[in-house]
Image 1 (cartoon, helix red, strand yellow):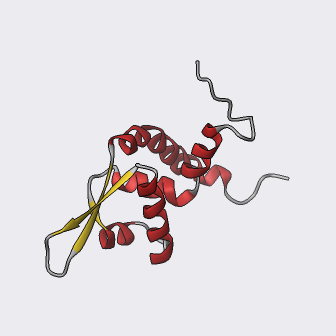
Image 2 (cartoon, rainbow, N blue to C red; image 1 turned 90 degrees about the vertical axis):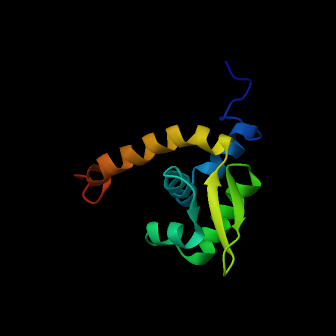
Image 3 (cartoon, rainbow, N blue to C red; image 1 turned 60 degrees about the horizontal axis):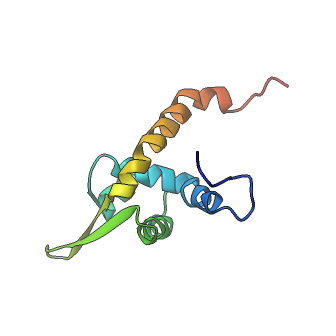
Length: 114
């Protein structure tokens, strides 16, 4: 049993949920679950994400040890992103959440029958 309680305002676990529960964090982690990717490949894979939002999301995930950034010895210099061990441990729950969202998108969209 955990010593943390997400119902408490100052619980560190709640901060963790805030970090990973936004749409772009989930999508980026899910995308990197396929393996290391260059920034441009990741951006092209994720429809609707702006360069600014992708950069902010990657930096946030990197600061929190979920993503590792590596400079590539290419001309021009490229950058590759990959999940860390901690990031890989998040991949299972994120995959389940993403698949659930895909399966129930129609059920949750539009007419609520009211």
